[in-house]
Image: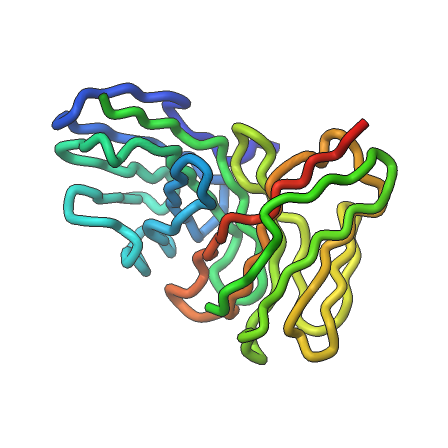
Length: 115
Length: 113
């Protein structure tokens, strides 16, 4: 079956621009997560959705970062006034439920490069 | 969530068992041990998890010490496709907002032909 998909796979932008990164989770998965991975590091948590609402956005680095999931399926991570330090791979994951032991299914990521 | 300590890198001969250690000496009684791996240029992939008992699935075995302060992931017959970074993670289950994973830097396993 279809896994988690993310678009675009690569995004190059200039400092100060606005970008949107899209995540299509596995159908029926209620939980959705965004992570950011810098070179040589493990993924770092950004935000977690339970259905349509952000249950935990404590990992968002500042108010330039925002994410939505209006219909409880597709999610968009939005970054305003991009900075060179935002360059990283942005990973999305989904899981079928939010309680109890469960695995997260990751997408391939979007590689963001801010020039 | 408890922190974990893993060796930064390991090598393993193809066809042999790969044993990846993880220390989690501050683990709490309700924290599970999870293992994920990340093959180059791909997203992380779930391998296995456990609480107290040893676990086995089609990918690997997880051995947790009796005091739960450390664990070992075992790939019984490593192949070249098992070359990846392996992450050991401990986390509490079932708490709203506590379902995110805290990755460290993991162990880079290289399977050698």
